[in-house]
Structure formats: C-alpha cells, structure tokens
Image 1 (cartoon, rainbow, N blue to C red):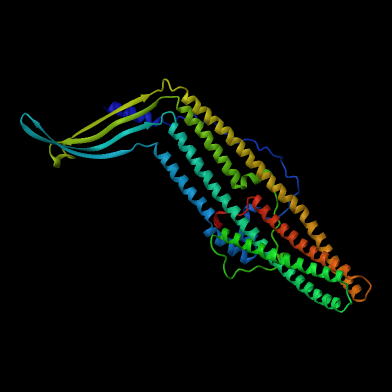
Image 2: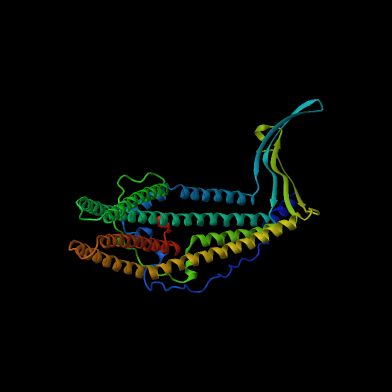
Length: 458
C-alpha cells in the first residue's frame, strides 16, 4: 500500500507536462510611425490622469458620477468578478476533492452482534494532470480573466471620453442657443421695423417677406437647437447612470476650454498603453492555451478513484487511539481507442480559434493605429480651420455693420442687409461647431493614446 501511495504522489509531482505551443506575439501589421507628426513634448496620455487632462471642475464632477453609477461600467466590473470565479473553478480541478466520512455498522458474527465504527477521508475521483490538460484549461481561464479586466479598463476609458464629449456638445449647444436667441431678437426687431415701413409704403412687400422668412428661419433654428440640447442632456443622464444634477451648468463658450497637448509617441507605445489591444492579446493567449488542452486529450487520463484513508474500531472511544488504520485506492489510466475523430476535430477547432484570435489581435492593432492617426490628422488641421473661420466671422461682422450703415443711408437695398445678417449667423454657427469638433478631437486623441485609465483613478 505504501508503494502504491508513493506512485500516486510521484505521478502528481510529474503533472507539470504541458502541450501548450510556445507563445509568440504576432508582429504589428502597421507602419512604424504615425503619418502625422505628434507633439514633441508633454506628458504621455497614459501618465496623465483624467483629473489633470480635464481642467473644468464641473466636468470632473460629472465623470466621477459616471464612474460610480454607469451601468455599462458596472456590468464590465461584474464580468471581471465572473471571470475570476470561472478561473478559480478551473484551478480547483487541479486538486482532489476530499470528503470526510463517519459510519457505524452492527453485524452478527457467530450469533453475536458486533459493532464496527469507521472514520476517514475519501477521494471519489481525481484526475492527475500528468499531460497538462487541466493546467492548460486553467491557463486559458486565467488569460480570459486578464482579458476581461482589460475590457473593464477599456470600458472606463470609453466612458470618460463619452462624458467629456457629451459635455462639450452641451457647451456648444448653450453657445449656439445664446447666439440664436440674440439673432432672433435682432431679426424680430428688424421685422417689426420693416412691417411699419411696409404699412406706410416706405418698403416693398419683397423686403417685408424676406425679413419675415429670415426671422422664421431663426425661430426654427432655435427650436432645433433646443431639441438637440435636450437630447444631449438625456444622453448625459444615461452616461451618468442617474439624473443630471440640478446644479449642472456649462461655461457657455467653447473658446474658453483648453486641453493639454499630448505627444503621440510611436505605435509600439500605443499598443502597450491601450487596454483593448491588451485584451485582444490575452484572448489570443487563452486560445493558444486551449490548443494544449486539445493536444493533451490524445493521451491517457490518469485518475485516482475510490481512494480512502481512515481508521476502524469496534469501540467508538478507541477509534482514533487503538483503531486499525487502512489505505485503499485505485489508480486507473483510460486511453481513447476510437472516438470517430472527436479529439482530432477538437484540436482543429482549437487551432482555428487561435488563428481567429490572431486576426482579431491584428485588427485591434490596426484599429488603434487608425484612431490615433485620425485624431492626429484632426489636430494638424483643426487649428487652421478654426482660425480661418474666426477671421471669416470677423469679416462677416464688419460686412453686416457696413451693410446696415449703407442701408440706413439709402445706398444699398434691404436684401443686401438681410444677406449680410444670414451670412454672419451662418459663420458664427460654423465657428462654434468647428471649435466643438476640435475639442472633441482632442478628447478622442487622449482616448486613442490610452489615456483615462490609471489605477489611482479607478
């Protein structure tokens, strides 16, 4: 019996054999550098906490609320807990399940009733992981857990960026609303004066109808912007996971908002920083480990069954003192002879799943490269666009004043004045929208470079 127990322990000690293929990270299928130059200096996005990147205290408060209450982020966190529990289940398969048992039996022996008590430990069935099948599944489960945790980090980055971009949209909404209300008030007054001139024969109906059309267009724009702001506010409430605080307010102008200028670095640095890329790699590692489990299925499964270690005595008080100790167990090896190709098909599935994971990993890298490149392209061009629209707005402002002066002095027609009003309003709205796009692009760049996730800001 002692020899058999030694054999079992030796088999268990040799259970470190593994058929998992050696993992090699696939080469990144992207260029070695981004197509647009990045900032030469500044703090890397991954080293810049979101509390420092977003300077407005009102925005930071909203992000804090979202991190605590957003349901998608909560589900992501629960998925991590679930993946951890599943890994614990896989890891537990490496160890035997030991049960404690106690029994008493009375049997007649030569006409005399004899009572025998027994107590001990029992292992019903334990697969000794000699060829690493269970260990491979455990490593696959561990990689799945790591992938889920990286997914939670990616969800946090996405949430922070979404709240910031939604807040910026509300800032632009308020700015455009104030501009439209001012424009509508001006056009209402202009329409009133034109109506008086028309009623007294000093203006044509053409002038009156043109002024009326321009006024109603401004009123329609006000309704559209009001509806857009309500929708953006509802979107923000969904991101926050609760109603927007009653104290919510915006700076009222996109021009006053500034974000840090971030260096882009190299694509390899971005890959290290982005949780979604690390998530894809962990899924690849998990798929690679499953190949080891599929390979190990071709070899015998060694199982310890019915193993018992305990003591027996005719007296309950002497069970653990003078009782008789006994050990028993069966070590069995089962080898599949015919399975209609099931093991081979399982291995093929594992290999194809690994190839799929490689393609998904490479796609994650390419998507990350594109996102950063798009944001860098925006950074390289939005500044020029905003400056040109600012100068255009200034020119339209001067044009409107000159047109008003010429009309009041009878030098130009009223239609020229209305055209100048329309052009000025259009230029002002375009400037607001482009500033919004520029700020949202900066947030997108921060997200694309892996910013928004740090352990201290979770």
